[in-house]
Structures are given as structure tokens and as C-alpha cells.
Image (tube, rainbow, N blue to C red; front, side, top):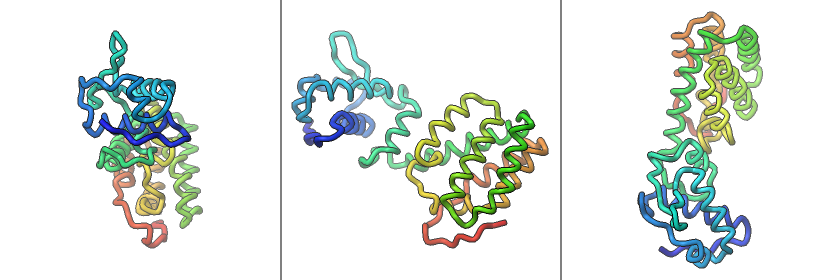
Length: 239
């Protein structure tokens, strides 16, 4: 299988990205054997150290396994890969081999955020709840600056997830916040419907403060499933 030569910077990143995309897109199928280090180094016109580093990263993502004798076998990423693969694809400048990735991450965010809000209402520490209420009360002052509202939105959800007391949600949140909040490369303008809903953020905080888990989940889901908009939409906050 031919590969284009690597650029002179970040050669290991280049090799890793091309092999990752070839595996996820199905050009290499589960149980296929990748070419050896020497063959890959020749195809990419890089040294074997760069190839070895790329293969190490692929193994960390659950995309390959190095077998006895040094053969590198492809794994089924749907069975072995974790969230790190999605984040790797979202950060990549390459053409994404998973066309629905942004949609899928948005759906995951909505599921996690909705349940985290319910749990936060049911068992959050009073200090976390108080901080959440203060953050929601000050949120509207930032309108219509979507960039600042985006940062404040992350801070609000960080408190919600912290208050949920769920370590798995906390770790997932930390991963998803890398770059932009849980949605890969969706800019704040495209999330104007969610970010500008000042009243919705206040309702969420109020229901959590009142210990109303079902209401908190309902308000969270309403925020997190707001339709994406075009960057040319109006910016008046719904207070």
C-alpha cells in the first residue's frame, strides 16, 4: 500500500496519523499485519525510530498489537479503542475517517451531562452547589460575547460534573474539554443556541440547588441538545 513521504517536521505524527486513518477507515482490517518497520520507514522516507514511535502510539490507542516475533497486527478499533481515539481524530488536521464523529461526541456529551446534572442535584456538596448558583447568576453578564460565554459554560459544567460525584464522568469531562467542550471542532458561534440561553443555565442551577434531580436532568438535556446554528445568527441572549 503506497504512502506519501512524510514532511520534514513531526515525522512521527505524520506516520501515526496516516496509519491511524488507514486502520479506522478500513484500509487495514482486523487481523491484518502491518508492513514491517523497515518497509514503513522506506515508504514514508523516515527513520525507523519515527516508525517505532508511531506504532507505540497506535498500540496505546488500541489499534494494533505487537505479536511475538515482532509482527504488528491490526485490532478492531470498535472493540479495543477508547475515547482517546475520538479525541485524536477530532484534533487531527487530516480528513476524518469517521464522518459522524462530531455528532457522536455531541450525543455523548448530552447523555453524560444530563445524568451528571441529576446526580449533582441528588448528592452534590453544598459548597459546589453554591459555586454553581453564583456562576449561573453571573453568566448572563457575559452576553453576547460568545467566546467568554463558552469559557464560562465550561466552568459551569465542570461544577455540575464535580457535584455528580462520579469519577468516570469527571475523567470523561476532562478528556472532552480538551480543545473545545466535547464537540471536537464546533466553534462557539455554532453553539449560540445553547450558550445564549441564560435562563436555561439559571434554571439548571436552581433545580440542582433545590435538589430536584429530574428537573435538573430535563434542563440539562434542553441545553445540551440545542440545535447547532450558523455563525451569522443573532446574538441576543434569552434571559
